[in-house]
Image (cartoon, rainbow, N blue to C red; front, side, top):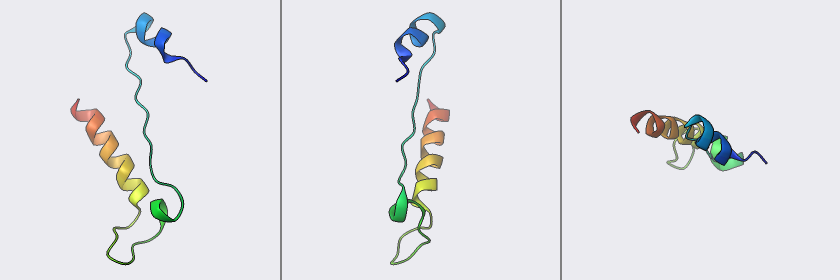
Length: 53
């Protein structure tokens, strides 16, 4: 494990991690009124959130 506390204290850096859906829910093509590739949509929304903060 990487301890980000020292990095944030010494370099004044904020660490952000992004989680997304894997498997059938994350990267299955759209069916049954579900959007295509929910895992990619999770990543896009996380990056937008990071960009706005």
